[in-house]
Length: 98
Image (cartoon, rainbow, N blue to C red; front, side):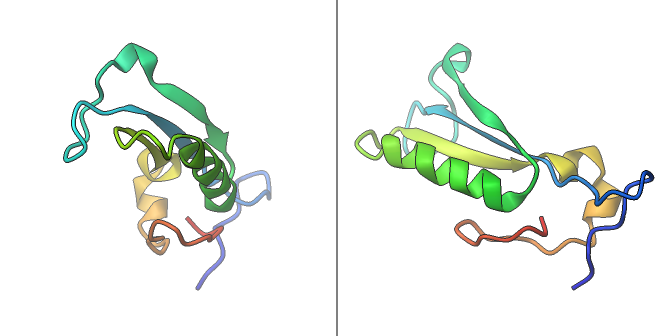
């Protein structure tokens, strides 16, 4: 696997990830009950730290099946051409590549 291409300043490309969640109307679909109550956990520099934040937050809501947290690969939205060469990371897999 190739490393992320360097940023123009010589720094590794940032692989930003957003972790957020909230209460769903139903457990069988992703439709939030109240968008004004979404919980924005944070933006993280790589998948590993985003996964750790997601897991910690999700574990605090284990008693409420309607509350779900998600990891969004912001870098794939911001630069889809560059991200096309990165491997897909399955949920639960800790990986710094994407």
